[in-house]
Image (cartoon, rainbow, N blue to C red; front, side, top):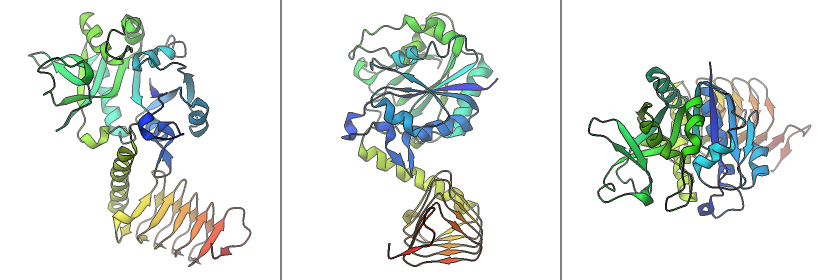
Length: 341
């Protein structure tokens, strides 16, 4: 049985200083929540539900082939899951819960989180990581035997707990039946007056149900985006990750730091990508091409042996061995290229 993913995307994101909801901000042409949806699907989730709230219509317009649940009042992560209870009523198996503002989680890590819970027969598996500076993060509190005793939010830390460097990443896999059996035990007696999903760990422990942890191999993978600075940091990580994957598959980049490629782009081997080139959307490039410098291709089909020099193409088709540019602006709807774009 495939897992279900519940992606929490209802927050406003006030630190972004934007009229857009936080999860609608884009990295490499894809909104933050879109990265989370794609990772969940690739991890094996055959059903994806997105919880929306602030500017719900905006978020729902940019995510496709998912179900939506509204959280009209933002009363915490536990409350967000409560809002999805009717939609998930009667569900069983693994329920992956992740934040819509974490664009760097890999399908492999999410699959490992699901597998760890199922193999252990646990009520919950928690994705953790270790940070040199854990300020602002909820801490993983362990018993002397190493098992998880609970998760304490940063603002609620007791004396001596600030030094804990293992942190909660707000990514979980639950046994769906166990979660909804115990979910309404959550209380909001904390500094924020919110229902913390993290408190489910302690509830499961008190009920004698198992909780396991999976530590992310790379702390960068768990980076959440709460500001424009963190947006740029996440973009740099994803840019490097995607570019390295293409280079290992036979693509040459003369300066990878000056090439930006969207996560859905496919590129044939022996293609050379020059600096200041952008490849976004559903773009497919053949073999032995030269792209750039200074080109931008979005939703294009480029054959083999082509060159695109200092041009902007949107929804265009470039035939095998065709040379485009410099200074060409070609779109799907334009019958002929427009010079001087």
